[in-house]
Image (tube, rainbow, N blue to C red; front, side, top):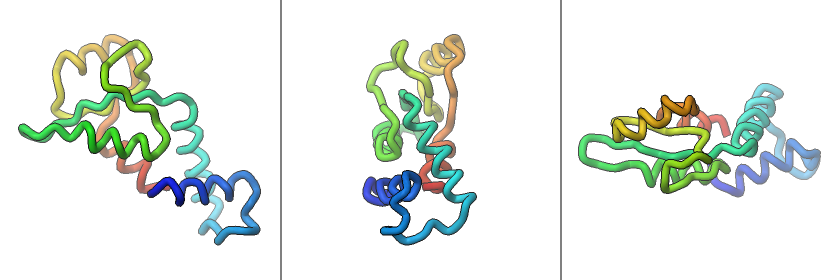
Length: 115
């Protein structure tokens, strides 16, 4: 979902629904509110996603940024979520040691699909 669509849906949630097309149902509104709450609550993600020799981290990071998350280039103390697939073992070990949220690309896709 693009930034404009997200903004339209946010307007629904804050009371400007009379000027906008209706959301399909209450469940959709609650799911959207849940996602917005999650992403606006300070998600700072580091992305380490690889597929064979291809590094897909930038593409996945861009998608997260479009959803409202902060994406950082270096794994630091501020990181709250690691998006990981076949990345560096060192990065995975740091995330496990710090007990941050370890999520997959499917998590990002699920968030995007719900918006």
